[in-house]
Length: 105
Image (cartoon, rainbow, N blue to C red; front, side, top):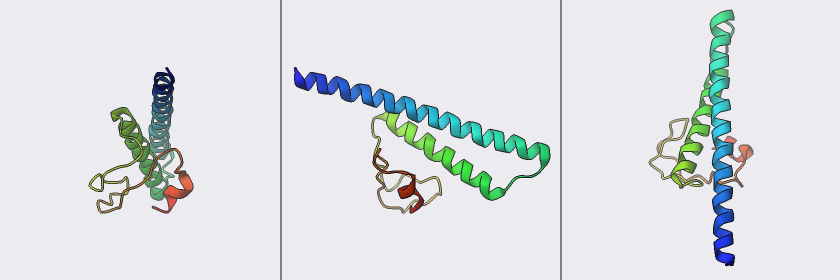
């Protein structure tokens, strides 16, 4: 009985995590679009900031796709990162890896 309960809890956590990732990805997409629209109106945008927002969006969408596929946590070496580094080593993108660790990548 305990094994089934643990399985149910693990599935529930997975659904919650996927929901959180979907919310984060949607927010990142909205920030990119908002910044893009802001730049079109006033003409005052930073290309660096736009690139940063696009990278955040790409990472959020990648994490969401990986979670939906059931392989959250690690990516194969051949999967490109948002920055486009195809030869990067395996990355741990589990819940324990935070933004401070991502900055070093």
